[in-house]
Image (tube, rainbow, N blue to C red; front, side):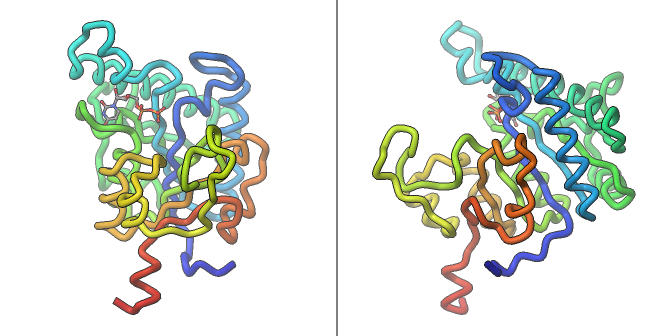
Length: 249
Ligand code: UDP
């Protein structure tokens, strides 16, 4: 299916859970190696690859509010969790033979380079797989928003968002058997219907900067079945402003 997106530079948003494997928590070395292997493979297909990794396998700030911690402190801890994941993924990528660099929005120079836009572009051009960590560097945001921000900054052709389901549905398909899957949907419809795929800030940022989003099942990444996703955007949902494209506005 030709959906009109020519892809050379991608931003892949991986939730921390991708690195968790079958465990209930933390980092599973085998899952890390699998993810690294396929990222290396995608890179070998001639794509420039940047990743934003989440931290939900270690913890999410929002869950810690129940413990009485202030949200800002909890979010700092959440952002630090993404650093742990980034370091693990970088090591796995290097072991797989890839060049990989971790760039952090939270300054932590002994363990990761500080985020720098110009350097990030240079690394991508040079064939280094970039792992962005530390989210946006600010509390009250998510790594989905960080993904939309970095995708905009590096002029990614598309943001790939790996989730637990095969795309965007009218309702949660894990709870409702009558949920209908969309092949393609506009940013505005995702926002209007409050579809739970990425937070509204991330969707709005992609809409403003015309970054298409492709939502697919993270299992494809772990089972080495990403080619149909990358080549013709099948097995998922494409989010863009196609309604405007159709009406010529
Ligand atoms: N976080 C934050 N600011 C950001 C990105 C993330 O404060 O810009 C914190 C927030 O507490 C979040 C945690 O980091 O819960 C982990 O990120 P996220 O929940 O997005 O991870 P994922 O669900 O993708 O694994």
